[in-house]
Structures are given as C-alpha cells and as structure tokens.
Length: 90
Image (tube, rainbow, N blue to C red):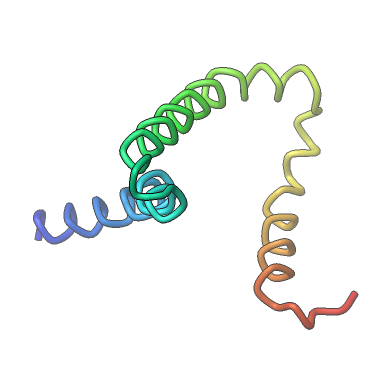
C-alpha cells in the first residue's frame, strides 16, 4: 500500500512541473539550441518559484486585507470554467 500511494503522489507532484519545464520547452526550441533552451527555461522556472515563495507572504500582508482572500476559490473556479467552456455566456 505504501509504494502504491507513494507512486501515485509522486506522479501527480511531478506531472505538472515536468510538463511545463522540460517537455514544453523541448518542443519550443529548435534542435540545435534545445539543451541550452531547456537549461534556461528550468533556471527561470526555479528563480520564479523562489521569488514567489518568499515574496507572496509580503505582498499578501502589504496589499490585501485577509477577508478578500476568501473570494479566490470562486474566482479560480469561474476562470477555469470560462477557459474550458468557450460558449459560456455571462
């Protein structure tokens, strides 16, 4: 049971980041520059993740009152629905 649970959690943890960092960048860059493009894309992704983790709490406390954060789940649901259903009318 542990190995199955670990395998499933590892799959879902690595599915999104690896797709956007390595698979997508290898499709975008030409063959000659693919290794350099992969390295640059991975480096920029890691710097962005580092900045986001450390600056998010500072931005949250400085700009937004705590009660406004309660609307974000609904906003995320709406934008996801709007993205995948092109015929959704307001």
